[in-house]
Image 1 (tube, rainbow, N blue to C red):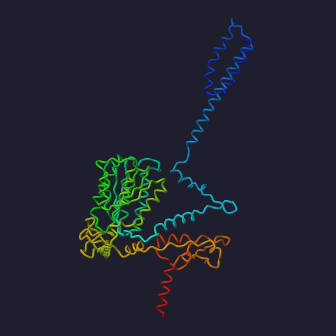
Image 2 (cartoon, helix red, strand yellow):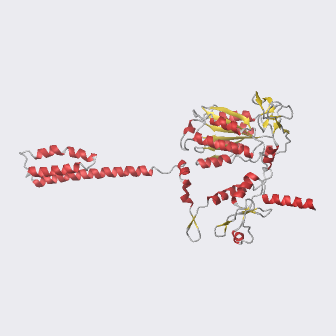
Image 3 (cartoon, rainbow, N blue to C red):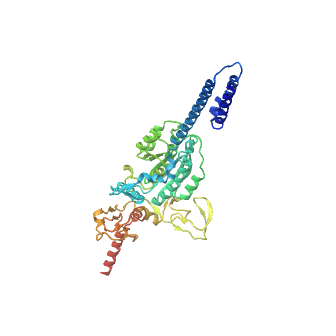
Length: 477
């Protein structure tokens, strides 16, 4: 009977062997020796005792299996909890649009109108910039300082900080020259504790972009003091009518300086150099102190979209420093474009070129592009479109007024079409769409035309049409 009971327990354990976890297998390995000892002739054990022994072993193995499964579930929960969305992932998650859901008066969800939200943000920014008539610097000399130390290889911005900064700098350079055709930009790079001048001050966006894209390498530490010293020496040669500015894109959390950086900050302040910093990691006291002393702005970016917004804020001309807010007469030349087949030596590249280029009206030297300064006589060379594009900063268009809901509901007072693009101002169902009105000519415009007029056209079509009609009527009289 003992043998039969032993066979029964052995078959029971063999059946459990195929379904139990590896942890329980350690308990099973000790069972054959114990079972063989029970079957020896000199042992007199009852069947009930043997069944109790086999049942207790099975309970231990089941308990071990449950503990093992519980540990696996805990590890899975920890992995899932650690998969929270990162800052750089928000760009690829449809910008978390489910957080922008809105309800109407009846409590039902209404579609997300991203255009209206963007327009509201734009109008808030427009009101703050045009709230007061502030003198701005139209001729700017700006150095962009790029931190390409080993901190720029961090991957909190995808694919890395260096790539994101290079892409945003490219967009900034194009936007800068579009809004400041009389200004110039230079590039400085920080790496290995040294400041390198990538490009000198110039008005060619393609040359600056090519220089940035060809030097995408990171190494060593960043030295903020060396960068400020180099920029200070370069901007000291700028004439008094030029506005000196520095924009620093800083990735590191420290600065490796050879001397006292506080003295360098005071030198920049004395030279009227406006320094602004955009941090990519965390707020630093020395960067904040630099911006406070020189009258610049200091921000820390949250994600890639925030970096783009912060960088493009420096494209429009900032308010002029009080000491520089004086009227100056600047002598400029308007060169003529050279003939296509003419062969001449370029004064900026020191080589012979065929066709194209411009001829300085004072010394007859040849230059490749405008605006620039003649390398021979130092005359500032511009074209008439450059002056026209800079004019709108002196006399910006007044911000348009939002049309109140009471007026929009009265379809007789509001025109059905936008005065600019002639698109309908009514949504499906003859529901009035958001629109704005010029405070001078009282013409109504859609949201897209409002942004286009203030950012690109810089003239109100309604006011210009009234001017032309008035001039025609005067001529007829």
